[in-house]
Image (cartoon, rainbow, N blue to C red; front, side, top):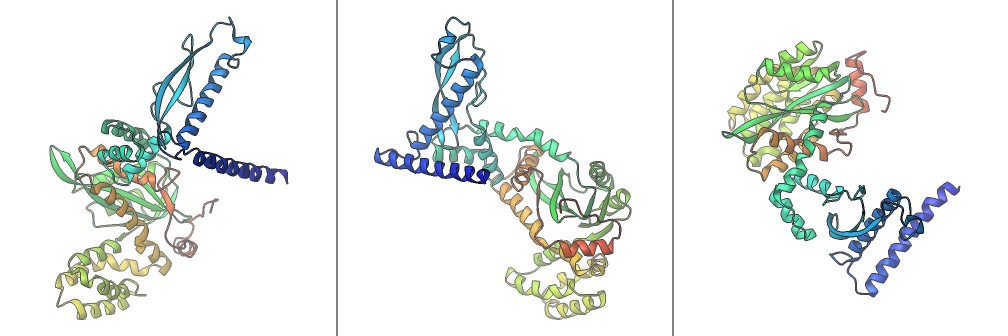
Length: 421
């Protein structure tokens, strides 16, 4: 019982203390925020108290303790230092010792920012702000000048983390794998559109797992895809039930080379998206409703009947859409053999489209990237921001148990739920 009471009591005491501090600040006309505000004063006090405690531990005696007299190393005053914190710049007094052997931990030597500031910079960058916009944000909100070079150095710290993420171990089985691409402008002598391929897996417990991001040149062939997929396999992926992709040259063959039993499915999402490119925006909503019976049909014959109805309504106005679907029909129809729950996974646009939207938002303000690495860093920061664990995982946007049962029946012996499900 006491274990339950103590945390509650501590929380109440903290709330009471906070109320008393706020009341005292208001009574004395002290602002809560700002350079001379209550929060800045509290932060200064906490940091200086922690540094003084570190000095005491370093020397082995308290300040003004007689035990320190003529005992060799001793305190040697303080030096003033300004550190940037989440509430703005705070000026603190850092204790010194005579032989300069004191190495503080809470605010290290030459450290000018608390760790939380770096996370703010990374978060703002992941949300699409340029280095100049982040610098302006700090000056406007915190009254602190942070150079664009400093911001770039902060974001460069994630490069090593990005390499670790790109090489991390993966799950052994993914019921579904998506290969998607986003095109970014990169300066390589001249500014060109470069594809960056994102491989997304659905785990056996229904999570979206971003396996990695690879830069392409455009027009990649089987050799390129074999390299990417072999890398994924070497990171622990033993089996993939269905791989969903566009008609990228060499990709289907590479998938079946790496995982022979895998079924390769043309991406229905991209087929639908390409349909809208030929149509006026004002017809998109109605056209989407008329296409839905085609890709939700129970059989190929039923889908053909629904498509004939679609042609009757839209064919005269948009013949290019009819041609598009007829040319892709043979790659589309295998989709109709899947259980309805499996179709939901393949056709669920939310998780993929929301990811692409976040990527596009982050790159929109930049115009172009100076290097391939800068583009990869930007995409990784977005991926990192989506998952507190840093692995790029998120709960899928559908109920997973019906789909898991459908996969277990359709692919017997290949789907094993994780122990954490």
